Length: 395
Image (cartoon, rainbow, N blue to C red):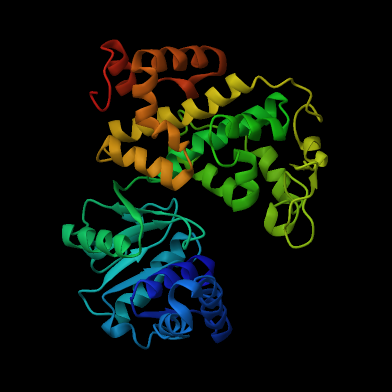
């Protein structure tokens, strides 16, 4: 089950769904149910002790597949390794009905490739949850060319039953949310390479409305996890998502993985709490030794830095719409706001383009392309829209 699986099970049971957990040990099952208890305990004022007991009664688990034979949907949340995903499909198909849906939780692995080894690829679908599952309001449902529309409808309905906003996207490496977040994170890496201070990069993001900055986000999710995702994006989108990985790898090599190891870009107390000074998180100055200058002395231009972060994301969001990964502008805005924290008052990437004007956005991207390189080349759809001063919503 793991942390993500525990969160998914917790929310499903809370919404009245009977859940059977499977893990490698009974201790892991116990931890998952303990996670649910902790979450439900916070809600006891709403539904009382009897409601908590009722919810826990919907959860059970074991180390084998007993109970899976009657399952309508199986959601797996194993590590992001393709061979492991393939093994899960093979095992689950042996122990479930032919009609059962196999939903895989992944943030970047292509669903088409996961489904390639399935006996019934039409019943394989992606469900990208965000952590912590009980708090994050979005589920990204990923469909392949073979996914049965009935399966898509069933999983979308289940996600809404969980209380989530749902966007349905077509399969590609990174899907939508991971794919549009990647250029934003890569731009932050470039800024570190250019000599900007870590706290200034984060401040540039929060000043334009993001809940946390990209460097803080990398510490939260794990520097090793971030590096793997960015490397995957670089492999598939090298024309505009290239980035210098060696310095990030150097952090990982010395055990600097972020909050989970209490050693990241920022300083942490035991237990993962940030070290603070006068209300500000303290940067671990030793990280700079791995960067080109050895120290960060460049004065921050918060307006320009914020624009670089936002437009790198906006450009990729429009590209996803252009390629048909997104089915609508509305889905792109919903996914960005509820999935990755795009400033809500901006309404989402497409609303942002409409508010500032496609002609202006295209011009700003062209200027950034001249100064910082091809990663800012405006996507063809934006160029076309800018030439005719078009908008996404036609308002």
